[in-house]
Length: 198
View (cartoon, helix red, strand yellow):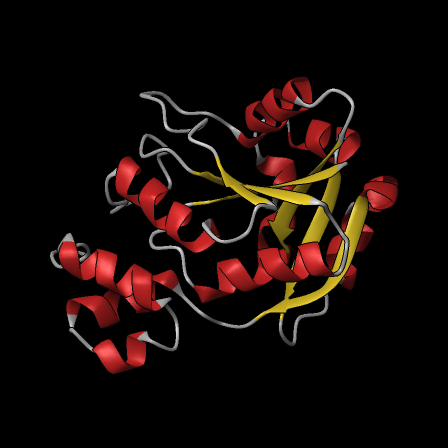
């Protein structure tokens, strides 16, 4: 089985996250996707809402699809790096293939990550490109690892979690429906999330 590890802050999880997962599954890049939200101790992520609430929202968007799961592995009181997460799932699923789902923007500097070259060497990387981007330079940069880098036919639009949080704070409910599932909007409203900060 091919298992895709989909990391991110998911703050909040929006329609593009779900669409990427469904397309990767439907186009048979992977057979299963595990969403792994980033822990709040990660120094480059700010204004994350409570870990359990982000877990709840991910469970909402994956609830009706048995091919998708949510893991709390990175939600510790210390930082878990992507290399550790991938090693954890490789150990958990020793007979399966582990794929790392990665935006082209993140891939461009994966060499700066903890054990970034180990990730390039030991895992298949499913690259999600931004619309209008040419990733030729990125592929040339990592040409020694080209056998492990798979550029998917899926392209990200410019949906931004920061902009979505602004819409929530400004209570622009109609516009939010373009970006968030209705059950996520309800959860955010019921729990008064993202009202104080972006």
